[in-house]
Length: 379
Image (tube, rainbow, N blue to C red; front, side, top):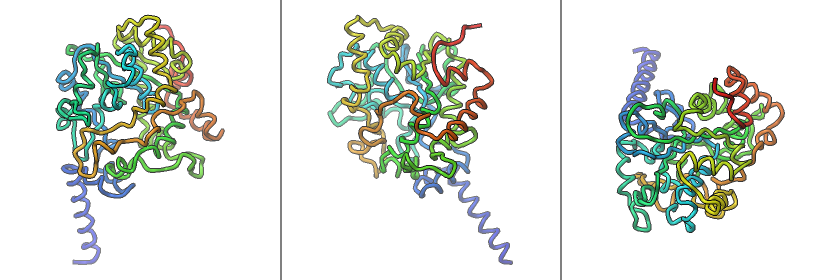
């Protein structure tokens, strides 16, 4: 056999092997160094990031674990998700969980069904452990997220329609909260977020997200996180796809679509609006208490936002000591308008062009995505 044929046979064999791994045990790719791990993951047809799954939200599955009145906080990535999870918990307890006894960590009090917590795991195999997992204090996880005092349970998601069956006919009556943030501000937060992950989490997932300091830029002035977000790149869906998916649902009765800048500018009015949507009546005193506990100052002091993964079964992960993000990194200043201050005028201009490309088909959407404010009148 000629050398060329031998090389060809080897190449074919490697390709077949990679394809088989991608089909049957794709989590093996996560043991490889970055970026090879992600190249192999994507090239064998798997979505990004590798630890997200939509299985919990499928129409034939969602009714098996939800109940009437549940709230899905489906805010956009880096658009106030942890802020809203903690704030809606304050609303449902009317600010009375003063010692955060029912909020030991955000991932325990407000579960995240999107997140696959173990390599090779799935929604199906971790679903029951949401009920049976024993916490360090002896309580089951279910005793916290499904406490009998709650008027509704809260679940986290970063998906939008159609992955979330918002207009599903029949089944449970579920409410959805979505929140959009100015895209430049999202990009600015993403540059900090990549390096905020712990090494333990990164090692589970093939080095993802890469540990790139916030001040590192390429020759064009882009941080990798921002470049990944741009239309056509690996995580474009977390912003452009997210905003476009929720906009048509903004007037649905089971949806509250918020803009991050509006909430930050008027926290008290926003809390009152959210409470009304959730059918929770707050007295004047209760409203003030909730608003105080929803403030960034209080959340930083509370520091209940490590994002533990108590359902993980990997031998390298310690469920009591390891967590997704470094301590104190999930609650930042959250300034409105920080994106335009963080990036160069050239980068800002390129991002504006992307906004025109992705939202320019609807001038009202383009304006609202950038600034927030009132929705246009229903035609």
